[in-house]
Length: 118
Length: 113
Image (cartoon, rainbow over all chains, first blue to last red; front, top):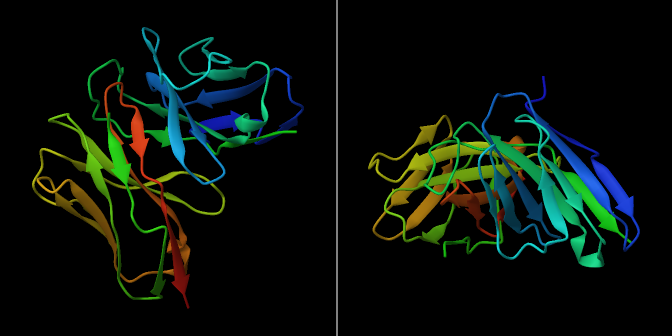
């Protein structure tokens, strides 16, 4: 069984469009995350979210928004896509309830979604 | 702000030999955790090993071990008896508030048969 899954695995779209990437975890974890990996393989946190708190990396444009219908899902919505949004997006989850303190828990990653904006 | 630096963009090792990947970091936290993740061509991020900063003993997982030097803020990964399947990108990571990970730029490891 897949622990953290993402759909779609590949997404090709035009500039200016709005798109969503879905993430689901079946680990019973409390906190989920989104990371962006650029063309140079550099990974950067975008969001940390549990049912109580959303922590946003200050460098993330407000065109990006996480939406969580329930504890097992954290979807990423992107409005008005730009060429620079092309990247691989990873979802992850951890057991810890998160918050502002440092956590002990390991994060488990999904397989990634390669987004290409033309 | 936290930073993680991997100074070796690429490394190569002969099969069955040992290789060490370097990582240095900076944080203002007194308690934190360090991780090494492996990313093969499939792009899946796989946890290799983790180290709690309060533990002086270096973590080991089978052929993988770390050399954690807290005062020097250094966290290197040693891979013994390298195998072809070890070829991948390796990322060093540090967790911070909200358990959000800060990653280094990665080291591409090539294993020669």
